[in-house]
Figure (cartoon, one colour):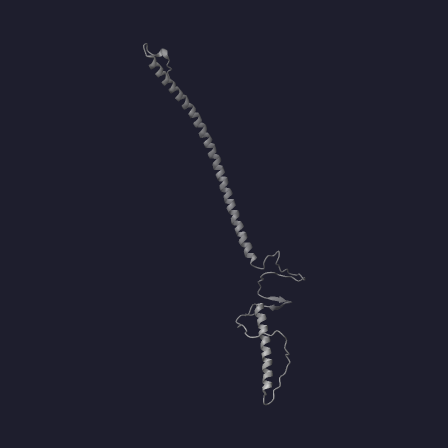
Length: 190
């Protein structure tokens, strides 16, 4: 670019004209210098953007991998919880409610215990519930009765003899009702 000064103008040029042209030249030089400076700044900004972009790509890949690992761990934990819940529906909490084999001390189980039957010394003592029973009504008697009691029966059957047999039959029926009630309450029949 040609550099102008007051000596490069034709003689007789007005001072205002020369000053205006020199100011314009200065503005052009300032703009040119500013453009060069802006280009350098733009190059530096572009370089920083490229570096951040590369770092962001690495961070995104790492974050994606971490998220996949976390989701996989969450799925594994959910599967383990389902398995634990499924196993927990059996005997119960094995730390607190376990029936241990080959233990001679008395054992207690709190909570529900599922089994097809219970055996003592190889003999079944409790099996599956027997259904189809109709509930008993009337008075239940849990006291004992004389299973060997005899009742008189004469040839003419007196009213007293008939009442004695009826009383004995009532006593037996009440005991049967009490036994039914106990077995139903226990869950053996129902």
